[in-house]
Image (cartoon, rainbow, N blue to C red):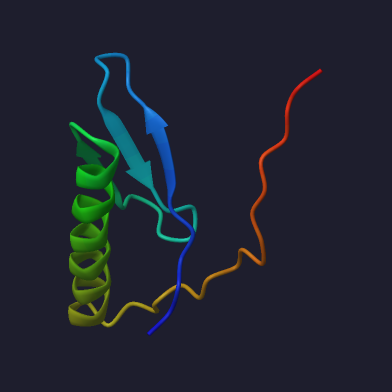
Length: 72
């Protein structure tokens, strides 16, 4: 099992959007933070399953760390 970084952002309507930089095209939406994470977990499993079925390579996680930075 691989561990991928998932970025979660607020959407204009107040919900949450999630995406994984190492899995292009794999996105999920949720009304809450937790819902978006759960939806993304499912989206990632389906995305990887589809790649396997199409005999496509599974991208390896490339992120080695995360942090937040306050802009000046």
